[in-house]
Amino acid sequence: MNKLRRRFITFNMIIISAIMAFMAALIYFGSPTQIPIVRLLGITIITLGLVLIGSFLLSKIAMKPIQTSWQRQLDFTADASHELRTPLAVMQTNLELVMDNPDETVGSQIKWLNNIHVETIRMTRLVEDLLTLSRDDAGAKTLEYSYFLLNSVAVDTATLFETVANQKDIVIQVIADEEIQFWGDCSRIKQLLNILVDNAVKYMDKPGSILITLSKKDKTIQIAVSDMGKGIAPEHLTKVFNRFYRAENEKQTVDGFGLGLSIAEWIVREHGGSIHAESIVGEGTRFITHFPIRSENTINN
Image (cartoon, rainbow, N blue to C red; front, side, top):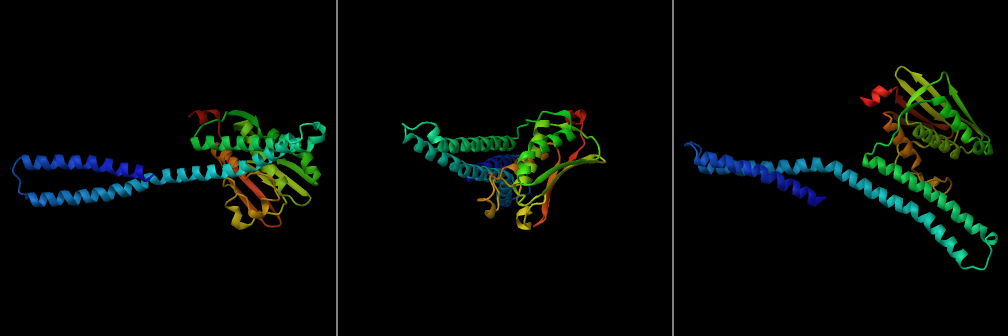
């Protein structure tokens, strides 16, 4: 990074010095001038000093987003490596147990094989999430737009989580005043709702209800997912969309990698929308997304 900055400053110095040298040559070898050579040299030195300072300041401004992006990549790599280490360690340990007993039947070692299977699924999901976020970092546009009925997507999500929710005495309801036609990537909006509802079910520690509310007002479509869970403390509320972020007291009690809400935020942003969370500790949390009402012509233009 410092090497790139030095190159930037050196390049600016060479270009501007060349211009200054050319101007000095014109003055010196051109028509007679009343400016003494000493004064001309002084002005040149002062100008070069100002150029050096300006180049340094410009390099800091130009390098700031690059440094931020670079640090983000380093953090992302470190966090991803940390998350991958656990499932890999579990798989290796269980495989060693199986390999140490080659004469045993598959049935007698099903416990270890099941552990490997579960961790394989976890790691596959993690890798898919990492690929999604890496596409975001690369600026890749992967959305496939079409018209679809948002109400149907919400109902499908509620149905998908119905069994898991029932096990915790949770009821998932979809509330919508009208049918809403949505122009966007249907699979990604499904993923968004799956993430928000899955998150709500995970953090519900008591019987209650989860509401998926759809509404349309003026030029905005709103999707809100509300739960009656334990809520999020104010100091964590602003960080829940950060990659790999989870409160310390949740890391051992709630399954996940801390990537779901980061992906949800990316999906909303790619559709030109915004997302935020509201929460009261002990009462519940509400994730609210706003999307501009768009059309095929809007996207194409």
